[in-house]
Length: 239
Image (cartoon, rainbow, N blue to C red; front, side):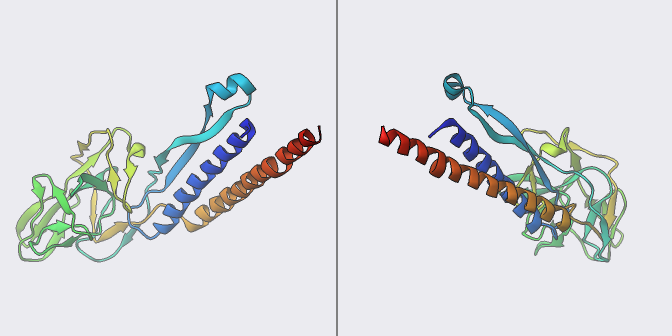
C-alpha cells in the first residue's frame, strides 16, 4: 500500500473517532452535569516511510479535553437534587474506586445513605452521608440537615486541570493521574440540577462537517485503490 493510502486511512480513522465522540455527546444532551468532549488532531510522522517517500505524515488524535463550560441551573424542587454553582465535583464511591461528577441527581438507599441513581455512595467530608428522620434542608455550603440533626456535609473537590479528567459513564469522571483537592467554599444549590453543556444544534453542525470529511476520505481511498493503482497495474501489465 502506498504512503498516500496510509495517510488517507489515518484521516478516515480520525473521523471515525470524531463521530464516536459526537455520538456520545448527543446521547448525553439530557444528562445532568454532563460535560462535552473536544478533540484535536496531530501529525504522526512514520520515520521509515518518510525516509523512503518523503510523504508519510499520518493524522492522529491530538488528545481530548473536557469542555468545562457551566451548564444552566434548573430548579427541580426535589430536595435531594444538588447543583454546584462554583468549580468542583461531587465525589462518589464505585466498585472501581472514587469517581467525580457534577450530576447531583441523588437519592437514598435502603440504609438511608445518599447515593447516585445506580447506587454509588455520595461522599461527605467524613465518608458516606446517612440521613435521619425529618425534613431535608441543604445549606449553601453543602451542609445537610434532617430536621434539626446535621447529617453531614457534601464533599466537593477540584483538580489542577479539570479538562484532563477522563469521561466514563454519563457524567461520571475518572481522575486519571491527577490528585483531587478538597474545596472549602463550594456553593451548593439544593433542589437544583446543572444541565448538560452540550447543545443539539452545535453537535449536529459538527456531525455534518465530520460526516462530509469522512465521505471525502472514503472517496480518496477509493480513487487511490481503484483508479491510480488500477491504471499503474494496467500500464505495467502492457509492458
